[in-house]
Length: 266
Image (cartoon, rainbow, N blue to C red; front, side):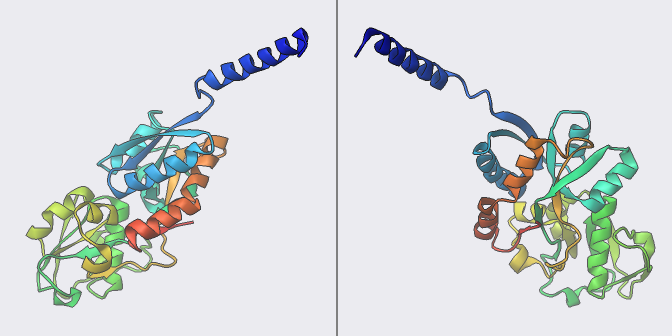
């Protein structure tokens, strides 16, 4: 080998070694807010998928529905993934957030649970029923109860009826509006409660076996999505995040881990 060729080869090896030694700083970072529990488990799968596409996701778990939008709005998060459109609409109306959906993730049909009853029809006169105290999930709970014949609500209330809109209540059930996260803990003190699936799973309730009645699993209007600040929905990093959520890996994880309790919404 000539001296000049040796120098060129050596230089090439040195450059390759230098490049391989550089830190993987090219990875784009995203701070993602989720609710702890099953949604955090799903986000861990999303993180692995996104890493293959050059996205480094930092997962930040919350225990209260009101916190991820607040954190996103003030810039502490780049995105969150925990809510459906009726909830976001209510939050925007109440707090003026400039937050928009960027792509669907999962849907978790809400259900009615009881530790005292074996069947929904067995609810007694004057039963105490817990429902979430936020407008969207409270309305969701009332619509579930109405769909199963327990009450009737005023026509035209859509997805957001309140207890004031109940126009027929033959069993004179009484509603206790509580923070959604607290409903599983309060269940023994109630005749039953409508509980969001993520909190039900966190309390070791199996929606497929323990829910006495449940929302429709098809054409469900409560699909969750990745949410971002308005204007960020078209960013390449956000599009990659959405693609990771909608990947075959996540779909397979939902089927294996939750066996139908949590479904793809895309």
